[in-house]
Length: 409
Image (cartoon, rainbow, N blue to C red; front, side, top):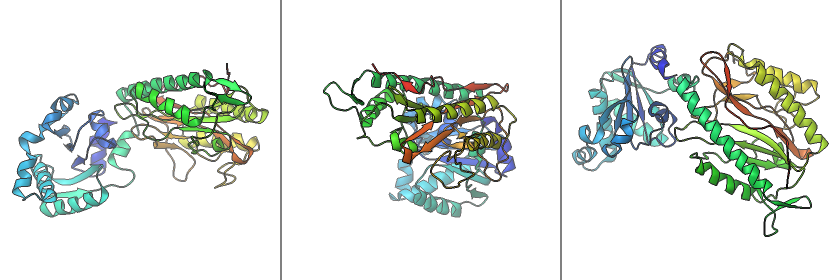
């Protein structure tokens, strides 16, 4: 949580941090500003001091809404003046600007650098910047960074935003289902008014419109895969494929709202009816889904939920990632993952070596068991996202029915 930043900085021996880059595609910037849309902003903070946002004058209203300490870049660090002083050399001007910010904000000691920037440009710029600094050491982190650690747990305000993302996502899923059901059936084929087959591309085009309508963005292509393609967990679904009755459809949707927080949910549908084989697989997936959802609680080792799922599927005769590592049939992945400003965050619900994480207040995780048999023409997955609140209770952020069969009109 944000309230942990000073403690985490002390643990990492960081005296300050600097966050660079536009807000777009910049989870750390979004985390600290609440998703404000800003161009070329900087965020700085000394340990045990307030967070400061350095922003453009044209974005002063947006910046004010963040509640952070503000510095108007145009008034205090005029970019045209830097360019003039360095004869149009943009790199030299940027290095001089950052050097002045570091000096004026008192960012001495070990200064962690975060944010999103082109890798080559960042390396060049930060190396030159370090050469100009005498009492400041630029520090980079890889993997378990300061912000990765802070973002593992969410505060009540963040959970409320993620609940809103879940509410809107469920609306979209319901509208997609009604869109499909509004079409006629000819034989085993779902058809449009002109008699042409309704395709996955048609469904996705409708879905994208509804995602935008509800104020969300589809950062990653939604999974809407039918038949054999549903048997490959991350197959997005070929847009030319026609919708047919009695075939399993894995519908995995993960949009984000304006503040940058994602939701993640999956439903498996079979239009009109389900085959006995798909129904049997679905009932097993739903059974272990219910068991792991009921077992999730503060203090439980994350690996225990995955172990429970592996034991269940293996007892039913399915290959798993434990009995057949690298295999493509059966249960082939871990049970879930953290969700937040990235669609995949910590903690992981896996039995990977070294995973000693306990579920804790503020964790937001997906629960998503599945069975996959591509050569038999089907896959099944059910997924909700849950939040463990500060009082220890578990909140399901996904509110949508689990029915496998979607009746067609």
